[in-house]
Length: 244
Image (cartoon, rainbow, N blue to C red; front, side, top):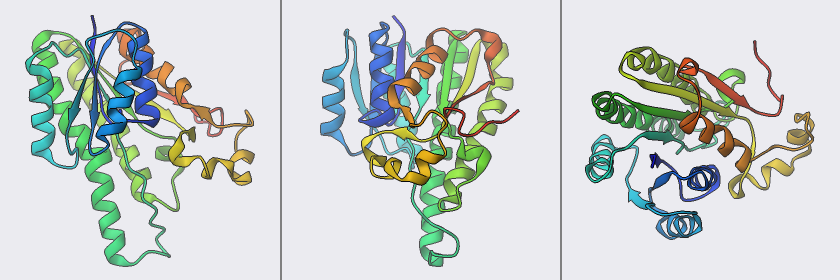
């Protein structure tokens, strides 16, 4: 059985990823920060057995280390999905300096430093095992920018670079790193935003991605993607942003 830690798994994309992995026979450890009740509900929705919950504040390096130590103490962890993230609005011309600083510090702490620290802990364990996978959930914002949330775009661009650096460093030890980069995804948190005609006008499919679609790609990277794909960034944005 494959054992996978999914961060930010209490709802939205993280919950969809957890369900997709469980449906394919994996045992999932669902990380949450404060949404314990929602995490329990997601846990109850998973197929199969061997699933569990784990709490941690990913903006705190000591909490990240504790999280990995606890989840890896009783089971061999085969993969980590760094999905947790925040998206605070802080347009540069409409945000007070103190709020600007707070947005940058919180966003980078959770979206970039948290995955970096967790990947560090996981990589050292997985390298000792001779196998493992790290899948990081990025965003099309890393390539096109986010004028209203520049720290978010910067954090995801940094996550891409981190992933590629780790892919090079860890491949000789049998640890593979992949990135999944969605655009807009239909989740309760953004339900109102994705009804905006301007958002829909940017979608060649006429709709944004479903959380289950992103989850399918993440599950593929965790369970099936060939070793030669390590370092790849896979777009899941419905052709709303194309790059070559």
